Length: 105
Image 1 (spheres, rainbow, N blue to C red):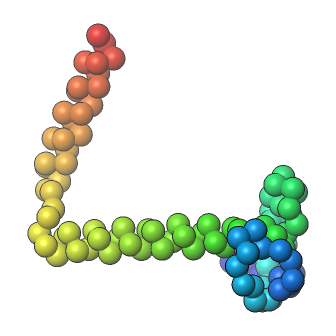
Image 2: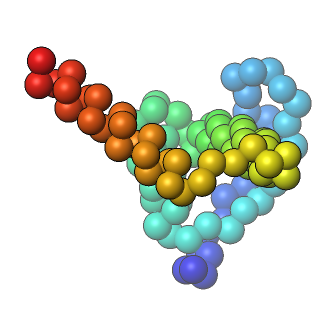
């Protein structure tokens, strides 16, 4: 992992689009990350300081959703709701064959 070489301070005074309360933080970023953020912000018509909270919110929502999905999968496995490898292979082969028949028709 590259060593962080730049810092950006996220001000607590810029208008957050959802009107949520803000708190200033400082993060250290690698040059490549800061450059990618600047490019993305420019494409979106935002400043880096405006883009970072949006990116973090999106990432956290996605991460929490994944964690919930994994927890549900663990519950299903613990309850014995599983499918064998052979059953999965047979299911995919049946789907593949049905799709080939549909495309051929």
